Structures are given as C-alpha cells and as structure tokens.
Amino acid sequence: MASDPKMIPQSGLLSAEANQAAALAGFGGVLTVDLDAIIANWRKLEKTAVPAECSAVIKADAYGCGAEQVARALNKAGCKTFFVATIEEARKVRAAVPEPAIYVLGGHFQNTGEHYAQINCRPVIGDLNELAEWDVFCRRTGWTGGAAIHIDTGMNRLGLTLAEAQAIIPRINAGDHGITLVMSHLVSAEQLNSPVNAKQLAAFRSIASEFSGVPAALANSSGIFLGAPFQFDLVRPGAALYGVNPTPEADNPMQPVVDLKARIVQIRNVERGESVGYGGTWTARRPTKLAIIAVGYADGYFRAASSNDGTRGAEVIVAGKRCPVAGRVSMDLIAIDITDLPPNAARRGHMVTLLGEGITVDELAHHFGTIGYEVLTSLGHRYARIYKGGNAVEPLGRPAPVAEQTPATPPIEQPASPPPLLS
Image (tube, rainbow, N blue to C red; front, side, top):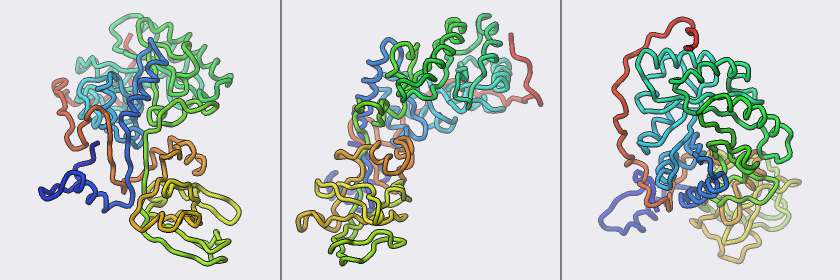
C-alpha cells in the first residue's frame, strides 16, 4: 500500500502504520485506489478482446484515480499503449513510463510538434489542417514518431469526414506516411441493440480497410463487449478499467476500484419536527440522531444526492449498515440519519463509507443524476489518497526518469495558411 509521501509525516519515533494514521487524521476523507483491481479489469478486457491489443485510456488523471500510478501499474502488467487528452497529461505519463506509446486525443496545433517530439508521444489528428501542420513539422525536422488519424463515423464531434479520409488514401498507399493508427469512436456502444453501432461498424470497416497496413481501433470500454467485429487491432477501454459498468443492460463484469471514506465530525440529536440543512427541506419525523460527515460538493459529493421531505437521497455505510442522507449536501458537510443504529455504533472520529462496501460508482452516479465517469473525475483533492497493490508501484513523487527520446527540435515557423497535403 502506497500513499502520496507529501501526505505522510516521517518520524523515527513512530511506526509506519502510526505515521499514516497520524497523517490521515488531518483529512476529512480518505480515497483508496485498488491498483490490483485496475490490473484485473485490464486483463479481463484484454482477454475479451484477444487477439486485439488492449490499451488503456488514462486521461483526466486516469478518471480521477491517478494517471502516474495507474500507468506504472498497467505498464508492469503488460499494457504498451496509453491514451490521454492533452500534451500536459502526456508529459506526466511519460515521466512515469518511459517506453509505451502515448496518444494524445486532443490533436495537434501549430507550434506544438516539438512538444510531441520532446516526450515521444503521438497526436490523434482529426482535421485536414492539423494533418497539414503535422506534415510541415515532420518534413522540416525529420521527426518520425508517428500519429493517429481519427475518422468521424457518426459522433459528429472530432475526426475527418469519410470523404476527407478517402481523399488521403493515396498518401497512405504511397508509403512512408508516418500514420501508426486509424481510429473512430462509437456513439452508443453501451446500448447493445442500437442500430447506430452497426452503421458505424460498416462505415469504419470500409474506410479502415483502405489504410493498408495501418492498425485500426474502434471499440471503447462498452464497444469491447459488442463482440469481435468491433475489436479490430486495438481496443481503448477507459471507464471500465476503474469499475464503471461497461454493460449497463447486464451485471457489471468489472471489479470495483475506488473506496471513499469520510470522517464523522459530530454526533447530534434533533427533535421531531426540526429541519436539517440549508433551506430546511428535510424534517425529522421522529427524534433523530445525526452523524455530520466532513465531505460535501466541494469534494465531488454532488448536491443532487440530497434528500428532502418527499425524496430519499443517497446512502452511506455507517458501522456496516446503510444510512440515508438527511437534508441538503453542503459544500463541506453532509448529515446522515443514524437513528436506527445500535447505541455507540457511530462516534465522532469514526469513518463512514461513501463509495465501496456495496455502494458502486454507478449507484452513486444514479443519485447524482449523472454517469460514473463524472463521479470519478469529480472526486476532489481534499482527500488523503492511498494506493494499494499494483505490484509495488512507486508512490507519486518518485517517478521514473524521462528517457532521452530525441534531440531537441528547432522551433518551426508555421505558414499563415496550411500547406497542401504531402502526396
């Protein structure tokens, strides 16, 4: 089990366990990430997608779980390809894992080519202007680090149109094109019977087949479970790695990854008829015992989880039993109704479970009125973070050194308008 070393005071007078306990006392909540569960999820997805390569999407700080720690753990488990959203995310991941391929989904902009080269990562190009600018950079510097082509097959968000992709086929077939992946993104993969899936599959299969010798990727987490036709040469799971259900029409095949606990800061009693929280929206219908918990919407526990006199909100595990939220979630605190617990089962200083012990990311997302992706990426920075498992993954703060990938590239003067595509 590893923790951020900046959070754990070091003292020769205390054991490691006592040091950690002392450090955690300064935090209202503790977020534990099970790296072994992430590895197990990745291996399950890898097995499901065989013979396709299984990559890992670790954008948004690995969906809030810690990109450096997750990258190191998955790389040790055998993952050789990662996807992030920005160059800055790629820089942090590269510092943690010097060898794997890293693709940046945000694409290429003028004067950013040298940044890609410095850390040896690859842009995912989804626009002809981007492709032209990337060509200029590669031609002037001799950089051969590779790039992906993103083709839009129905998302209408990023990517070359099918006609634009068709237009660059002669360039691909001419060889020496530097394209290492062709990809698209599914719109409704979590809906097994959506007709959009078949339409996108047909469009992507047709265009990808013309990118001679270039590996193809279509499936995200849910797309992997649509079957072999969707898996192509590489799959790109993201949320499923972190325990979000990729098959919401069936039981979740993934292991839970995140456990979130928060501290009771006060036990108090309210009389029947008294209200609790902002707005007085929840009224005690009996003499009620409350536990006040040191977490709120500033920590990523959404205000939508509140309860009122007509609606039951989210639940929290206190002393092994589910107890409901009482009143509105505020910025730093929530109130929990613990009236039905045995006397002294919950005391000031005890920890309660907001995520874990049967409360899943998807259940919490339901109460928040959102999806598991947003729950994970919203978890705040006021928690103490603990990592367990991961084949002795080093704690944050001691990343592997960045390998010297290439000589520094000279600054590039970009033309006012994009040049013609190379042919």
